[in-house]
Length: 394
View 1: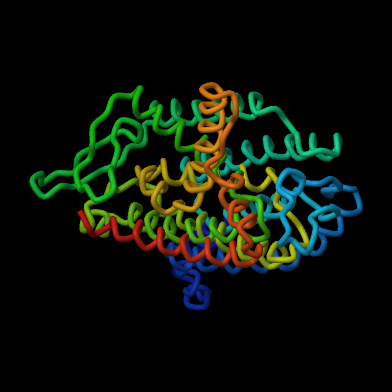
View 2 (view 1 turned 180 degrees about the vertical axis):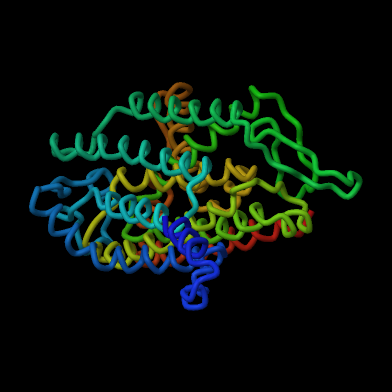
């Protein structure tokens, strides 16, 4: 909105005495300036609204007045502060600030609209799950079948829409003087490999669906310790701040041999807003947490990372950058799979980890919550550096 308003003012006052005074408004044409503005706006809004939202959540009794699954099943001795009574659904703050900030600072195009739609849809699903937990006062919430059905339906809608979307990406290779025009679905880019991989629509749609569903659930599984999920999300968002800027810049995309996606630069503004909103939320979510994001926030954040990665042809880079999220999700799948397999074979289910997701495994080993979170941040930065290296190492 600010972009269109400032450009209208510049055009209206061109050739008048006001033109010189309003010339600084040309800064709004630069994605870097608007990204910085989005990050600062989101951070300040989160700081300002945070106490108000927390007080409101407490007032309407949207708090976790039950023992979560980890504490109920894990007997976590290192936890000196219990989670009961802490307001949840703090993801509403993140999503609200992110949407307002993006609408203010980004140019509205199809990519931005689709991204915000996905975030809102995943947020609504998470809200339903959190509300079910609060009304029943237990950790069950919505059934896994319902959540997966909605996630797959949403992801399939996004994939089919992108397949039919007239907007295309361009990739300029050394051996071809003219850019290759590619569909957002039928072409995949693999890390450490410079050439596009042409795939059929069916495989492309499958990759998009798995990216969105996997990302949203992985962030959701990571959200078990104060500050863990939002901190790791900030790290991954920083990676995609770089990737979206490169993908939306013709010359940089050509130099680094990545697909140029028209309009993808505006996703840089979205990523900057996500970083600002995330830092503002972390201010209140760090240990000991004053508010939890709940599934309302974790599903929305995972969906946001997934849709951004898909829109710039980098779903596999998300697997690298989000290595912590992959570890968390893989630990749950391995634990459950091994338990079912051994129970079927021997009659007694066995476990690989002391507890899953894997952050609880380290709690059971005696690590304090803040130790687990800080060390996972370090791993997240390492994965982020590897992901960024894929821009040049091919």
